[in-house]
Length: 376
Ligand code: NAD
Image (cartoon, rainbow, N blue to C red; front, side, top):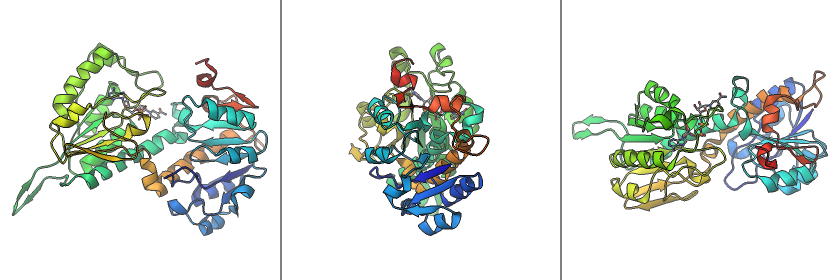
């Protein structure tokens, strides 16, 4: 089986879908790997390291010629889709929600697309789950960005010149990113609280030493879907939640928001009035800014200031840790590899396997994912 890895073309995307270590693992498993020259440069992986790992280096056009599989971080461009052979597979973070145009372009090019965002949340697929591997780093990096924008220290410091109070950090959404944000803010010495609508989050937040704040009514008890994600809450719940958040947020120095609902705009959790109740110098990092934002004032990829409160809407925090995020994403792909080969080691995707079924957007010239065909 022949795999290609290209340099990413999206603005600000510094990750790469294979590292020298992952190339070594793929070759050991029987694959042949071609990497576009310079593909790993922005993630600090050199051409020489890929070559030493056994990859062939090629120009962009030559790298995809005749390959069975393209590993990518983000969607490939149209030109690349057209260069791929009939029946080739593209795997990456393809932003599949509502992606009718992209899926049609793949189907028209007879390219079979697997979206890593749709990796099923089953134990067997955990090691292939790129949303988790990347969210974890987002949560960490969000706190580091907050520390950079905050004009004060995080830990309590008792000095001869007086005492500095610890920063108060509030994490909204305690999924993979949120839990890592809690852990990171605690390591830096902040006093941390967190909220979520899923009851399972309560114990996880507590086990990290943070205080759990939430409206724990009957709706809260049923807010988790079978897939482990949050449901969209009713307007009545949202109103109660907003009241609780408004009083809590006014006392916070750092707020990290991570709340997402698959396939829906991010829930609006922080209003302009809530921002105005915070003290100047406070910082909000809105990890959901790329999905519409949890804060009314956040703007994608901008740091805006309102009444002295800085609101940052970074949409690609993993790219700010490109070496590590690439390493984990590349490992997710290595873990997926056995589902792409047959017993003889040749290219033979396991189309019946529930992991592949969950991820497949297109097959044999047709769009097949139920969320795109209207069968969901
Ligand atoms: P996510 O990125 O979809 O959302 C982030 C968090 O926001 C979630 O915890 C969600 O409950 C929360 N949220 C949504 N609406 C909210 C609101 N109105 N107010 C406050 N919070 C709100 O979620 P995620 O990080 O992918 O994780 C969700 C769960 O799935 C976690 O428990 C995680 O451990 C689990 N998970 C399981 C697997 C697996 O079993 N293979 C893999 C990954 C994640």
